[in-house]
Length: 279
Image 1 (cartoon, rainbow, N blue to C red):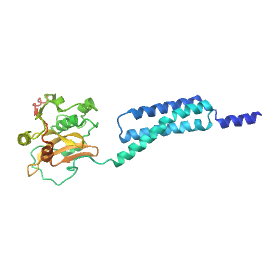
Image 2 (cartoon, rainbow, N blue to C red):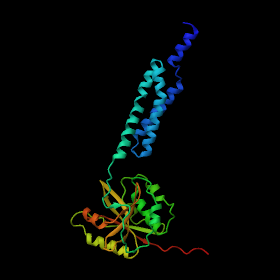
Image 3 (cartoon, helix red, strand yellow):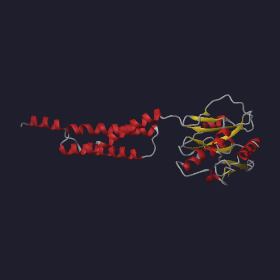
Image 4 (cartoon, rainbow, N blue to C red):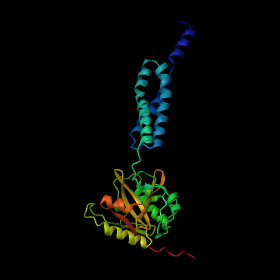
């Protein structure tokens, strides 16, 4: 075989550099790492699909032009991007087709006439965000603090401390003072046909009459979500607001939902006087 034939044979088999194998290995490991993460929101699906696709681009030349041992390594590494693309595709399809499990009454707009019992500013709620999927409890506390003008709209300290904590409840804020506001958990009773619904509704009404917001946990799908009761309509039904994946959401039938749940706990508060401004 002459030198020209040897060159063509070498080019055909590829002279795959070790760097390409290292890069494919790193991309495959990153793909496997992302697959281990519990989060499956659209951002992670895009990253997963992108990393898996990049691994394919790096591995295909090895599979085509590499020598026998390079092809063997590439075949082993090929498993991770294949799995990554499958999961990214399934996750994307599921995210698109997943039904809305929120209660039918949780809607974003409705012509409801409120009584105006509190100094409620919807613009403050619209600017607020729930940062984590499991942070609705600290998010509701932050909304109250913002409505009371005790913290700026940029305040998210409570959610950043909480993150994805899954074993918390409003008990974590019972007796806790934040920005001069002391929170209290009430009606931590068994949810059954003996629950004092009338007393609960009277307590919420009295808080609203005093100009106070009330934090409440309502059933949503298979779990719970925290809301801020901010007023009553002209028929005495409680009106609540919260944050969802699409922005601000409203609940216009709080009493009905609580009655179906056979009770729930609420969060109330006492406001300490703000110190006078320094001269």
